[in-house]
Image (cartoon, rainbow, N blue to C red):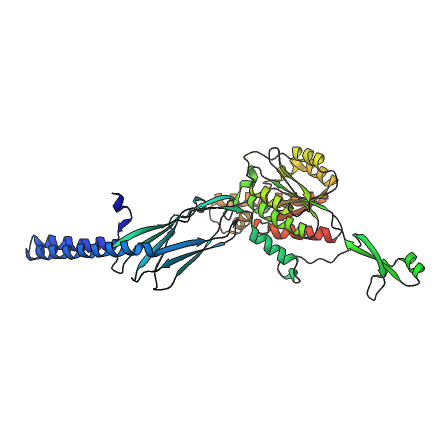
Length: 443
């Protein structure tokens, strides 16, 4: 039976076989068709023997490999390229199957084609992971058949490999390019005019045309008999922490990705910008109790430390505990920092319950509270409905939307910076807020 495992009969074979059965059926009425049936099956078995010989000889002439990046980027389309090589002289068709990791939940993946003589076959397809973790790829399966196509032979090309899926590296590089490019304001990243003189003193130099008269150092000018100005550089020593809520409320899905994973992607892109801006980047996570703490720093390996922390961050079934979060930050953060807190609220009451902790955090630090807009509620409100129950549901959805707008208003009245954003705009909004706070000298 082990001999039969790599061999498979095709649908074409069973179609041809049914024709032979019809001949034998007609033989009960007209005996001549019985002899035609015997001849038909004799030719059929000869063809099968021919295909067995050809496919057995040609199977050793097929090779292939999978080309994939060393790490997968969460929520992005990662290109996967498979190269199939055939060095034989027969015209063969193939069906290609890649044993994809279980996380993709793709059970019907296959590609069909034929081998052009003397040329390699390139098969390219995107893979979009929506979960962080280790992805185990299996072997490459190639089912060969001749032009006759009654029989297939399975060839297993060893290609097993394990590839980790990290937070979106592709988005991180993209936003870095946006922020530090000359035309960043054309791609969603704000270019904000700098106000005031929230800069660190650097040195004194001679005045040149175009310098701000307010920077003239009159004492130095009097000593040197020429105008001298103070030279300032942008402050680059602020501590910027992203604080991520990993509790049950952040497990809510949106377009295949959880709110926690949206926060993870945004945190990585933001902290990369922070490090490129020569500020100190740090990470704090919490759920029912304090979680991971990566102290703010700007060392060469800081981005990798944050990346590893985000890679290993898992969602919790516990409710979030802002009181313990405040106590933990009070102990660990000795100097004033900017905190970008990513969480989610379902109602105004949820905001009221933690308003005291939020005000305390904002008193000690510069707090920016980020929570998500439920775009499905907005879409549901715009739908046309005909049933009473649907009308009631729309009224409740509108009430909930108004409560969340009231929550934004009350938070801002309390002096807390707020970002209320759809999940897909989270990264852009948080980066813009950091750049705004930086340019206005708030940090």
